Each structure stands twice: as C-alpha cells, then as structure tokens.
Amino acid sequence: MNTLIDIVVFTMLVTTALAVVRTHSLFATVMLSGVFSLLSALLFVTLDAVDVAFTEAAVGAGISTVLMLGTLALTARSEKPSSHSPLIPLLVVLVTGAVLVYGTLDMPAFGDALAPAMTHVAPDYIARSPAEIDVPNIVTAILASYRGFDTLGETAVVFTAGMSVLLLISGRRITRAEAEKGATGNAKGTDDAIGDGSDET
Image 1 (spheres, rainbow, N blue to C red):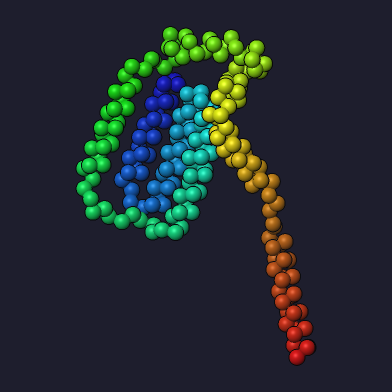
Image 2: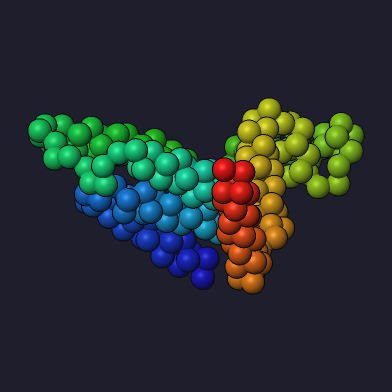
C-alpha cells in the first residue's frame, strides 16, 4: 500500500513538473510550484522524513511562494517568447537526468538492513547517543546535536513558520459592526474638524 501511495504521489509530481514547464502564465507557474512543493512534502512524509517535509512545506510552499508572488507583482503576468532554440536546454536536462539516474544504480535498496548506513553509522549512533547526549529519542539526538549545524536552518525556518501561523490564528478579527462603528466615528471626527475650521474663519 505504501508503495502504491509513493507511485501515485510521484506521478502527480511529474505531472505538475510538466505543467510548470508547459505553462506560459507566470502566476500559474508560481501556483504550480507551490503545489509541487506540497506534493514533495507529502512524499517526504510517506518516506518517514517528517523534518524534511516540514522544511519543504515551510520554505517551498510558504516562503518561496510569497516571495515569487511579490516579485510577480513587479513584473508581467506572462513570460516573453524566447528567441533561442529550446533544444540546448532540453539536451542539458536530459544529460543531467541521465547522470542522476546512473548515480542511483549503485545505491542500496530502500530499507535494506545491510546498507552501509545501517551497518556502520546507525549502530554507532545507537551506542553513543545515551552516553553522550542523554536523550531517549535517538532521532532527536541526531538532529539536535550531531547534526545541529546542519539542521539549524531547518529549525529556524520551522520555528518562524510556526510563530507566523500562531500570530495569524491569534489575530483578533474585526466584526462588521465594529468596522461600521469605526467608519462612523471617523466620519463624525472629520465633520467636527470641518465645523471647527469654519467657526474659526
């Protein structure tokens, strides 16, 4: 079942990437890029990489989308037609993809208990974490201590995203009655100021 979910999410990722390449609307490109980031975060969750999923959702779908929308407000809504041939970029993409696929051929199978990470690195972390870090959760010890500098940026991004969400949720909403009352008060203050000015003249 998990493999089926991974295949479905990966297929949606490929479809979204093709849509990003084919569309000429910059606004649609930005939105599809956000969708791509959310699908990537979902794929990371299915692969039990929740910390990376948080970072991808916060940076890719959140901050990057906001920055691109802000940039889009200063530019045109559609891309200009290119005067160069698309064959060279296509060739570069195909060669890069072929090199990446070739680099994965020697990788161990997913979840292989005999993988180098499982036979060398993981036992060392399991043996050293209780004595050196004194944290019951080994994953937390690795992320917060052994990989502290590596995950510092991710932690800062997730913390900023969480604080932003809390600020948005805790914001006090102004009701329609309060808005109308404030508008009436501003209009009355303006009338009073005009009246005072006319009296002085």
